Length: 366
Ligand SMILES: *[C@@H]1O[C@H](CO)[C@@H](O)[C@H](O)[C@H]1NC(C)=O
Ligand SMILES: *[C@@H]1O[C@H](CO)[C@@H](O)[C@H](O)[C@H]1NC(C)=O
Image 1: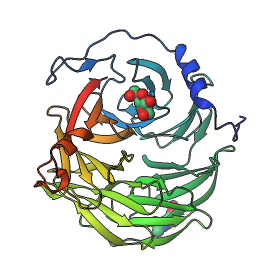
Image 2: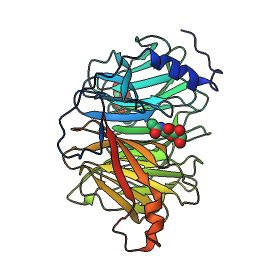
Image 3: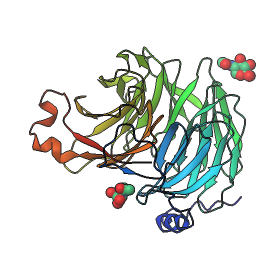
Image 4: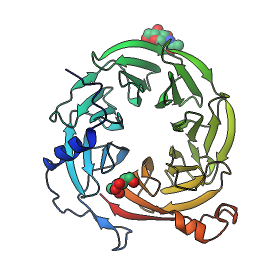
């Protein structure tokens, strides 16, 4: 295959062009268990539970789940843009390389497939070698290397162009749950079922730091755009565990704050894009069917959106400071709008008792 590594600056027009070829909305409506008529109902992206969602461009998202299909969806128009079929077990993670039309998908079928929105509907590359479900994928900042982590205890570093595994390393009991590349660095961070967080140096493919083990399985992580902070989320039951934790990557293992309030496993935690004049925020989603937004520094819960009936919420994708997508097991993808004005209008906001008053609403589902 040929990859144009340097064609990264002009992709949005190509994405739009590709989408014109997508099939039109069939106007299907899923049954409506809990929403009022204010919510737009679009053609469903998937049949079954959704495990992962990310953004390809401001208007296109990519998702995957139990139906084994990787779907590119135009969430402004409310229609499927492309469906990629190639996995034969559920899709666990999807990832896009910023500024390109590349899409990577990891699966319980032990492989990672690479797709290009502009190159038909067959995978353009396959990464085979893991012996169990692949739960983590990350791309190096230069777009040349793919890092994968699996429940098989192995972390692998692949050359994307040749699909060769160049480095691999197994660590006993390291059942990888998620992987992130630290922006503009050689470091990769991973969470694990053994409750620890490990930092790898991609040049030597050795662990350079291991954070003190938490009490429960670490399910997911995200790194702040400046590379200074890591947020990880925790498994849990009945309010025990279930927290997200902010760590300082410059002082590895240094815990900054914890975000406590979910009642079941917190499955996803992300840094939200800053809104003008606002302080940093973290968003979390949980098996308790709620999404919470937190003040990054004070750990006050600013708002909670309960999606009763939607089942576990295991993936979030922020678009800008006012909109994010949430993947659910029972009710498809949810487009959530956040009104920061609501918090300011109430005065002190973060200081006002912490019950959470940020206005969060579902405006569309698909
Ligand atoms: C996503 O964010 C961008 C930048 O703010 C905006 O232009 C775009 O309309 C948003 N997409 C949707 C579908 O709201
Ligand atoms: C790593 O994998 C090899 C080959 O499968 C195995 O023999 C070894 O015990 C593993 N080491 C650890 C630490 O899991």
